Image (cartoon, rainbow, N blue to C red; front, side, top):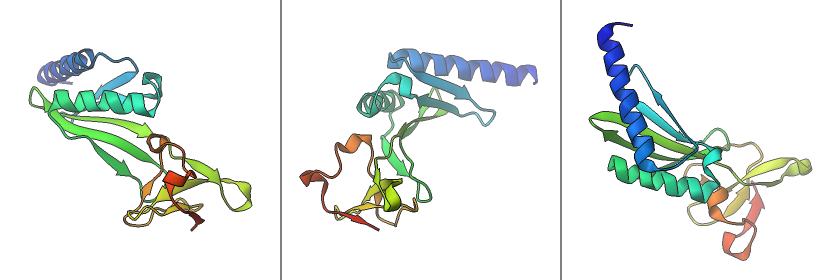
Length: 153
């Protein structure tokens, strides 16, 4: 690593440390990449889904970013994210959300998803149809009257 590269990496590490300190939360991990990006992950050690969502919202404010959500189409996984900048350095903040499951065909755990229209379905193959999203720990209890109609897809 050249001296210039080491200086740039150290500056990014200081920026990441300042961001973690300003956030005031435990359970974060920060990484600095050769691409110049800082990544801040909010781990399960920071608390449950609502607690991690609150921390991500705070990070988004610090980064002047809008929080968002990403759902994998090919496996039952979902994240909350915020992409912004700190001192001119791109920062990607994220936390993974636990996807709710229920007994699927044969009794094996299968993930739950919801359509844009509110239809709740068990998706044992883990493939999310377009326009659907995974039910996560932020959704409360699926299967209740508020959760909608449940079917096996």
